[in-house]
View 1: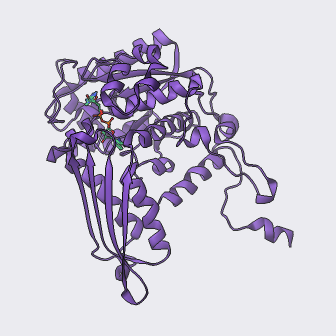
View 2 (view 1 turned 90 degrees about the vertical axis):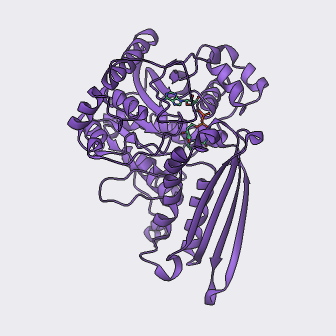
View 3 (view 1 turned 135 degrees about the horizontal axis):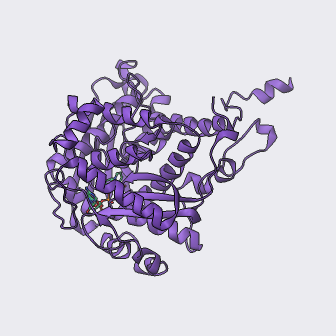
Length: 439
Ligand SMILES: NC(=O)c1ccc[n+]([C@@H]2O[C@H](COP(=O)([O-])OP(=O)(O)OC[C@H]3O[C@@H](n4cnc5c(N)ncnc54)[C@H](O)[C@@H]3O)[C@@H](O)[C@H]2O)c1
């Protein structure tokens, strides 16, 4: 049982360790800086904007989440980043082209102060990228130790009290889970022997967990979705969450599909295609990196629609996802969905969605919330896979033997009820019990 008076203090600096200094991370960092200067609003973030109902409806208690649970303040955040290019956060944000120059100029000196550390990287795992700003070491264990040393130096220089690491770097090539990923002893042996099965994202995750730092996987890479890392997270009592931020087309899918299922409307097919012109799009143009993304994007419909329970409605629906690299569009992705559904007596209908979204604008608040909630979880003594953060994730990790929950609305109830539980408030069932109490 969690006790609210046992949640450790939110005072002191929170070191946010961001792997990758590209479109999402610079948009996230710039938004935090602009919000604390009061020059922009953190729209899209539950930790900054949302309220939570407490008690009975008649109680009229509806505080902001940030006033209800003890979150780190944006003013207390310090960033440390790594990238394979040496550009500072201002230059990297200009290159990413998500935010306009006038918005970046308002926080120029703060952004220029963020200069990435050399990355742990090999082109073998992200075929489309070649960078020079990269660490070298005798083996992969030594590279993990170098990352830990970066973190220690930052801790001392900035007087950091606690940390969270978030992977916002490129999607790696698809890696099948092997025995080396299951056992911590085998994994550590693999680090010392520089096993090819160990990708850079696993090395960062290992460094974080070894130091007791919560790790969030914003990409579909395996990273911590494996036994070895979960053992380490449990041993060191560290929260972990992943995989892949839920934005854009998948966000729409997990909003719409639960509605179709709730009304028992059937599905014949869901065709999704995208054009995208940023560096993420370029990386995903490589079939091996795309495969990692595809697996993450395809899984959502199955778990929401549960064809095994509703074979007449959802057996054998055709689901296709395409991502097309189209440079002129930059970060302003456009997606099209064609959804073939059927209703009463089997009559067919179609839904078309054309979403002109800005991926990084959707991903930045998700990154902030994941970081602040992971820090809260750590201070509340929660560790291992944080299923209550599935709300933000495209391909959520679940405890062994459990099916992940992809329905955005169930995920939202779970998130808010977890916060109520942490603070020893009644869980809300939406039964309307106050009405019966009055009778
Ligand atoms: N944009 C979104 O809405 C969204 C949604 C879900 C997931 N993601 C994932 O988030 C990640 C970042 O997306 P983005 O649009 O910012 O991409 P991006 O290409 O703009 O940025 C990624 C950065 O990571 C760096 N990098 C690559 N490997 C690295 C390593 N080993 N160590 C340190 N840095 C490394 C690259 O140099 C690049 O600067 C991708 O994996 C993407 O699939 C993005």
